[in-house]
Image (cartoon, rainbow, N blue to C red):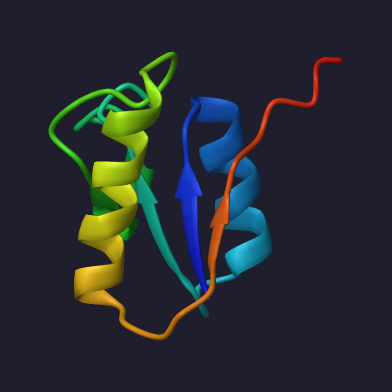
Length: 80
């Protein structure tokens, strides 16, 4: 299972849930290079928060290339 975190809060939650057993990817706006979490995730070199659908689809395709046949959990907006 792979987690895709969009926000810093989503990344923190993914790190808790993954417990070191699952891969985590995130956008550049979810973590800074000085953050300890930066060493534990795969980070895109572009942001993912608030991007259009095509950018998110490209990110998902990249993850699928690296982790074929894996389920990908994507952080969603639960503010409603």
